[in-house]
Length: 265
Ligand SMILES: [Zn+2]
Image (cartoon, rainbow, N blue to C red; front, side, top):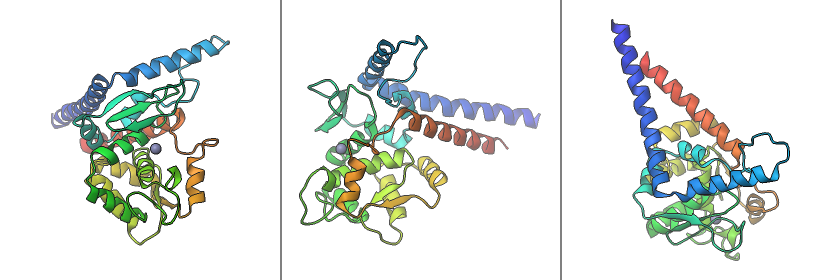
């Protein structure tokens, strides 16, 4: 009897977790219908360009599926963005124009949602963080100030603290090592604390991050050339592609299952 009671409790917990996650994804799509639309148009592109007749589930540009990205999203980040007045719409101008965030508008490229978390990072930096929080970030990662990473160098994409923050939001959510401009003792933990304090990470996602990366939780990009390489358009390392999103989602799903099993014992 005792066992049966536990099994019921176990199943209810499982359903509740699943429901909460689906609810967050549903609310996100409801508020930002363009996310669904961009995927449908990408799938169509792929069907038109393939000759084999084999059904293709991937877009031709390797975009991650927005369903996958939203299921990966930490609850705290979802809530933070849902209560904001962020808007997601097509990146204007020419077809294939890259994703960009301007003011409250997150513009998504017609090529896909590779940069979604990067753009969320820009939105948070420009619309949610206080000047003090931006300064706090800059000193944590070893940037010169909240505009420039390296002093006495031109303010461009590679030297921008705003871009640095956007990359790190994407790194944190996608369970990639965090980027630091200088190394100081205890800095990675302090940066993770910071990201949790502003809602980018929550305790659950931070545990996924630690489990996935172990001691490899940060890397040093302490010269403009190293950052240039990360931002390189020819060999992009920064965007998220379909396979990576699928793998990270599977990793997180497995851990969620593990949590439930631990709970049921
Ligand atoms: Zn950017």
